[in-house]
Length: 290
Image 1: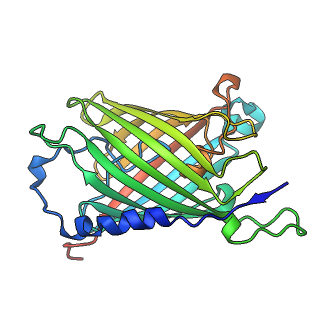
Image 2: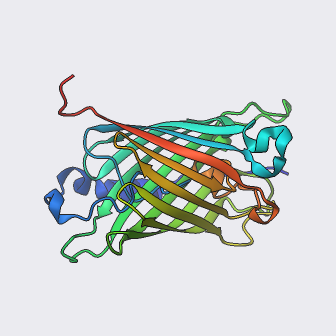
């Protein structure tokens, strides 16, 4: 039996209204006072990092995940299958970033906002960074059963995160990601509309332009009846100057929070591993003469 419970998310809007004075009127310190490049880009691997793009910059992000490697030579070890997301992200100012995207998985459209609440200081007065993240995603797949239409409200899912982390030293960065994902529609009455998860990420820089990353999202048990697995990914950051290229392996298919946190069926123990990559290109729109 399907369960369709709509719960208006009013409290995030209230919190956002409290942050408006900070967004548009906060005192800005010089760039030298802040720790920079805790992570190289706006993503760790699947999920968001605490970083935002700079004021007036537009980032074009391509995320790609191939099929499972263990499908063998017939599927060319996953290369015959692919899932991808295209996204644009814009820095409104040095604290606020807005983004939109479209995924082939579930034919999802998503939009999000990130706000840097705290930034780690080089003098140690603020020892870590905190970024607030909120997103909405809509599944636009056609109903498989014409006798069971899926209404607009039922297609929506929302995510709220605290991205907490910082640089331990010049090479090592850490991040924690407490997360709530809300699904307006769930499969059964026993499934929770609100999915609670806790993520952790690490980045270690080997050279000036190459770093290794790992990311794990733990979903608290007893929230879903379907057999799901926690999303885990390992990857490399490669800075090429004009681009940030990231190569990774993961058991997740989706590249938005509601998908890789609450809908990952791949099991590392069975070899359900996907090769993937992210590539980001940044364009400076504000203050540049074309």
